[in-house]
Each structure stands twice: as C-alpha cells, then as structure tokens.
Amino acid sequence: MSYNLLKGKKGIIFGALDQNSIAWKTAERVHEEGGQFVLTNAPIAMRMGNIKTLAEQTGSEIIPADATKTEDLENLIEKAQEILGGQLDFVLHSIGMSINVRKGKHYTEQNHEWTHKGLDVSAMSFHRVMQVLYQKDAMNEWGSIVALTYMAAQRVFPDYNDMADNKAFLESIARSFGYHFGKKKNVRVNTISQSPTPTTAGKGVKGFDGFIAYADKMSPLGNATAQDCADYTITLFSDLTKRVTLQNLYNDGGFSNMGVSEEIINKFTEE
Ligand SMILES: NC(=O)c1ccc[n+]([C@@H]2O[C@H](COP(=O)([O-])OP(=O)(O)OC[C@H]3O[C@@H](n4cnc5c(N)ncnc54)[C@H](O)[C@@H]3O)[C@@H](O)[C@H]2O)c1
View: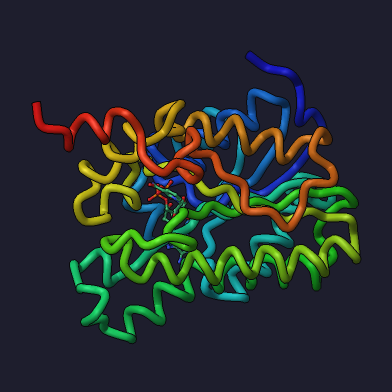
C-alpha cells in the first residue's frame, strides 16, 4: 500500500547489495511512496550484487562510491543533486563490514588492522557522509538522515565481535552530528536498531541461526524483518516525524526491553 508519504522527496540510498539487503527493501518502499533517489554502493559490490536490477525497477541511477573515500562521496553528492535536480531530503546509510567477523577472528585475538578497516567502513563512513553533505550544503531544510545499527552497541552479544564497538561509535556520531545538522538546517539524524535479519552482512555473524531464533522467541512481536525496517524508515523520511532526532530507535519486536519470555523459560524447564 502507498500513502504517497515521500512525494517530491529526493535522496541517496547506500548499501543495496541484493534482494535481501535492508537498503534494497527500503529503496523499493521509498519508490512506492513517490520518492526519487540515487543508489550507491562500493565499486566492488557492483560486481558482487545485482543493484542494476533495483535501479531499473525503481527508475534510478547508480553512482558507485567507496564510503571510506571522501573524494568518492563528494562526487556522489554532487552528481546526485545534478541528477535529482536539487538538494536532498533523505539519506540512508546501510553499510557495515568487519573483517574480523568475516574471517572468524575471536574478539580477544583481533587483527587491529582489520579492526581499523571495519571501523572506517561501518562507523566513520557515517561521519564522512554527513560531513560532505554538511559542507556542500546538500541537504534541504527538514531533511532526514538514517543509519542502521544493532543492540550489541548497548548489550553484550559475544559473536558480534568488533561490530559491537563500531555500532557504539556509529550511534554516537548520529547524536553528535545530529546536533550540528539540526542547528544548521533542521535536519534530523537517527539510527534504527534492527532485529537480526538474514542478509549477507547478518548471516556473516557466527552462530547466526541460533541468534536469530533466540531473538524471535524473546520478542513479543517476533523479529522485525527487512521489510518492517523499510516501512519504519519511510516514516522517518516523511514529514510526519519532523522533530524526532538524535535517537536510537528500536525496530525489534520488543526484544530490547525483554528480560525473559515464556518460550525461553519452557526451553529450560524440565518436564
Ligand atoms: N542483518 C542484520 O542482522 C542487521 C541487524 C542490525 C543492523 N544491521 C545493519 O544494517 C545495515 C545493512 O546491512 P544488511 O543487513 O542489509 O546487509 P548487506 O550485506 O546487504 O548490506 C551491507 C552493505 O554495506 C556495503 N558496503 C560495505 N563496504 C562498503 C564501503 N566501503 N562503501 C560503501 N558500501 C559498503 C555492502 O556492499 C552492502 O551493500 C548494516 O549497517 C548492518 O550492520 C544489520
């Protein structure tokens, strides 16, 4: 169903790799709601994924950019404004990567070069994107910027490894930059803390199957899907949430406020 929530709005969507990506589902929803956007991803992802299909489906252009490179971001943000014909109303940062997670390095045995790279890709890139948007005055008044995060920033999930630290940094950047962007242009900046979701990035976490099933059984409404996340994000891009800013917003079926659930108790109760 479409509510025309984003009619006339323009933006950039980072991180659509394949049909499972949260950014992919969000791009489809933004399109349904009347928004226009440029799609972007790291040059290597152009070869790995199938972003071209999404571009055709949504009538959008793709501009490759490595989110760790300022010059790529400058080019992206300039071109996006040319293509879309003006300043931007929304930006989705849906980027995450840890080499330690990918290569199965234990948290206590990190390769710090890899840690550094993961921090750059997953957290510092958010600052970099916003700094370029800010310096180029690329956002419209009352625009909205959203990044995706996970609750391992607040609570311990051992297998989330160094991504937990990256997410804590990301959430802090949302607040700190959100202040400056709010003061300058009434632009809001929030993070959505999403349930475990079966995507390329998600499935890379060790023990993901157990992890996602546990979260589902703990949450009164069950895990939020990528589609649920897309629905939530369009509300944050719409004019209906104008004064929601500097927040970390849980889209997790209630998981973050649970202690224990009946299903989990039953699993540990002997007959
Ligand atoms: N899947 C989950 O369980 C889950 C839960 C909470 C939050 N998140 C977050 O959601 C976001 C999107 O991940 P997803 O689950 O859709 O997985 P995904 O693998 O589909 O998306 C991750 C994206 O990051 C992109 N990326 C990696 N390095 C990049 C770089 N240098 N420059 C630009 N882009 C780069 C990848 O190409 C990919 O498109 C991430 O921030 C992730 O941490 C995921």
